[in-house]
Image 1 (cartoon, one colour):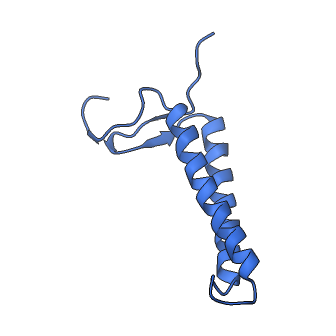
Image 2 (spheres, rainbow, N blue to C red):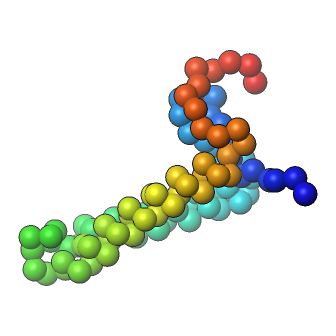
Length: 90
């Protein structure tokens, strides 16, 4: 069975862009999860504050884990991997 990729390499720069519905759903879901984590970060007073300290740490963990997981899955689901590109033929 052929492996189905969700992303393709960007034409310029580094990384990938979604090309299937699975890639788009994954990208939107990751953005929503990061948004929720950033909201938790914005409601906390930081590691030196007392109120909301737990939500601040949870928000930070959610953001970091989601970003790392997104990079790992995106790299695994990109045809040809990631590398810096300067354009070239389509």
